[in-house]
Amino acid sequence: MPVARPERQEPRVIAHVDMDCFYVQVEQRKNPDLRGVPTAVVQYNSWKGGGLIAVGYEARKFGVKRSMRGDEAKRVCPDLQLVQVPVARGKADLNLYRSAGSEVVAILSKKGKCERASIDEVYLDLTDTAKSMLLEAPPEGLDSIPEEALKSHVLGLGSDANKEEDVRKWLCRPDADYEEKLLACGAIIVAELRIRVLHETQFTCSAGIAHNKMLAKLASPMHKPAQQTVVPASSVPDLLASLPVKKMKQLGGKLGSSLQDDLGVNTVGDLLKFSEQKLQDYYGINTGTWLWKIARGISGDEVEDRLLPKSHGCGKTFPGPMTLKTTSSVKHWLNQLCEELSDRIQSDLDQNKRIAQTLTLHARAFKENDLEPQKKFPSKSCALRYGASKIQEDAMRLFESGLSEFLNSKNVGWGITSLAVGASKIIDIPNGTTSILKYFNEKCISSNSSDCSDALLEEPNHTVTSISKRDDENPKSRAPTESAFHTKGLSDKNANVKGTILRYFSGSSCSSSNQSSANKIDLEEHERTVIASELNSNPNPNNNWGFNIEEIDPSVVDELPLEIQREIRGWIHPSKRINTGKRGSTIAHYFSPARN
Ligand code: TTP
Image (cartoon, rainbow, N blue to C red; front, top):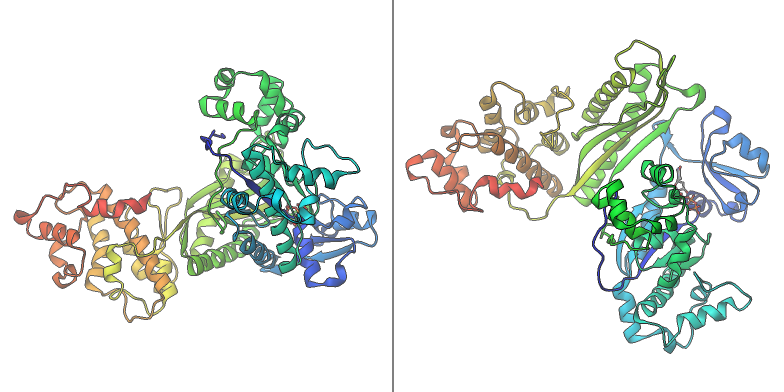
């Protein structure tokens, strides 16, 4: 359920930039012969000419729509050029589009805090840039206003023959209040950015410029392609009065339906009839307040400083005759999807030092003689283990668990029309974080870094237990895996944990030393999580780790941070044990921040 965030008192200038028919533009840049020609990008399969996923604006004029299949689109527009999405592992390979999106993000992010919201959408917080402009070069003092800015659509300004002149006057009003002056600066900055994007990438984009993310996002598609729309505060009531609730982000689903069915609210403006108290009575305090605020165009959501995606996902649909009807066909396709997911999270790890923690499986399914057709295939998640084979294994188990729930354990025929796997809860690996492994990296370095990191990254979150774990089939990765990370649900916990830490203390699990620094950091991060989880679950205060202290090589202890040395020496010589209860002095405390 949506939650209202506190708004900032200071006015903000936020832009939402959305690329126009993005995949089509990428294909047109690749093949300039397609420019100006009706074009659509199709995810090809033999069923009715494949599904359209992007439609160029020239093709839209002929009535071609994304919901069409290739054959139907060709009937509507015989000259339509259908370009196939690149294929890898039997499914769409979107890398070309992803990196094209990154080119744009690189340009936009130079002007303000930038949040990459999807493959082709970005939020920008331009408040500081707009403030500087207002101080140093306010619009009314400029010799000329960029033409692109003059073409802006300013809501509430009306549209007549003198539109550009009206926009110029609006941008340069000396009597406007500070908030609106900032917005005018924002409009000029965005116009310049869009020109830059076009020059440097050959892509056009559209934008909404407003005082918050919600309004900017509503405005960006209002005038497409290659245009921008500005939302002055005074235009907000009119904008929302006629906006269907379902068009509002977060109101497309059940909440929006409930507003329509239970309260008779059809437009966002209709919400104004209800007091905050009334909305809270219906939907709870948080959501009630959120609804009350969006009805007034108020939203405190901040632009996050994030140039990288929040999650990774890959999916494939199996329409019509392609429907998957056997476990082995599902396994085949899940393996393809998981391989791609694994490649992507691995390169995120290598390039950006980020770890994904949760694996999720989604599917669309039907069953024979269905008496409850509204019942959906349940999405399932578990802790993500790195390494393609482990992801494949876990995804298959998630599928089996979801299928059994979906079928209610009945033995009936079923079909899968779509499969997707996702990696989420992505966290940065803090650079320079002190952790035990930092002190052991030199001793614990695999000769095959990917094997070692695979094993060590195996189970980032022990609390997720929806899937029982088996040892990996790869014997190379099994060695550190089986003892190090199977800490839950095993009877001989000591023996198990002993393997975890003593391997590093004795330096026996790995050898040689050519692992990349990225992988070293991965080891640290993961080990910290594992150790913290062990610490929290072990009740013995004298030996939190639950292994035989006598087996620790004292020379290794010397290399630890002082506070940890003291704690370990306290276990080895309990009589001399210092008080480690003080905040910040225990290993548990030492590692706990990373768990969050
Ligand atoms: P959108 O931004 O939704 O659409 P678009 O850029 O094609 O067109 P518009 O100018 O109307 O914004 O999607 C961005 C890209 O994401 C799109 O080019 C193709 C891809 N996409 C899919 O693959 N499947 C989908 O269902 C949607 C909606 C988009």
